[in-house]
Length: 123
Image (tube, rainbow, N blue to C red):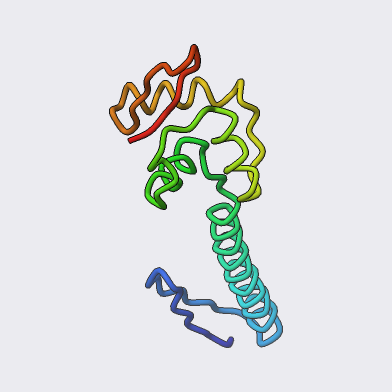
């Protein structure tokens, strides 16, 4: 009777006894499952990288970027902010930006004041 010993990735040592054909079949199955496991790990890594790449920037993050670029040197209206984001390829209607801007003001990342009946935002 033939005998084979296999050491797995986890460190487990497996001893197989049987005919040459039985051992050959078991080793073939073991190698296939090992290859499948490696393929699954590779696919999982690719998916996690793609997930990170797909992650969208929040409107507040984009507005903070505009601030860092000096966009708010002069006070800006919501329409001007929306247009600046649109130039960068992000479409946000002014109605959805009002809440975002208010949140940034409350966090003290932006300032706002009323000019001629409209809120304007700046440093």
